[in-house]
Image 1: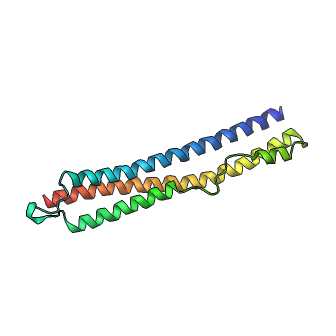
Image 2: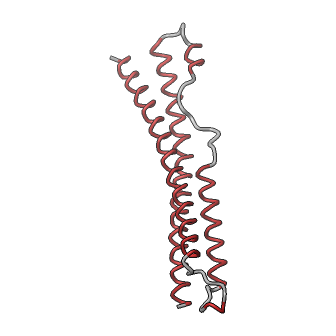
Length: 158
């Protein structure tokens, strides 16, 4: 009975590590989408003439708004870079070489040690993942501020 519980804990720990890896990949994909949205929004506004800088062609885009948008796009870029940056200490599970080193040991003891190591890796990964998800959320908020700044500048210029 004890070996079944140890095996169940091992399998669940492996599944949790896989889920964390998938979540990290998902957050990275979403972050890339934020950068694309910021770039598309700014490019679209410029291409349809919303960001007019020529006084001869009508009301110009306010200078404060241009600098603010520049700063916001820069913050978005940095936030995305933080999320996409490679993780040096990410735990994926027990190393096969380590498991083979315990080949002569009791199987239950080896599974227990591997499970305990994965539990430590899950906790470490969770801290790293939480930081990246928080950075993503902040960056998404900055994208909303960018959109609101663009709309406000266009209404004020109006």
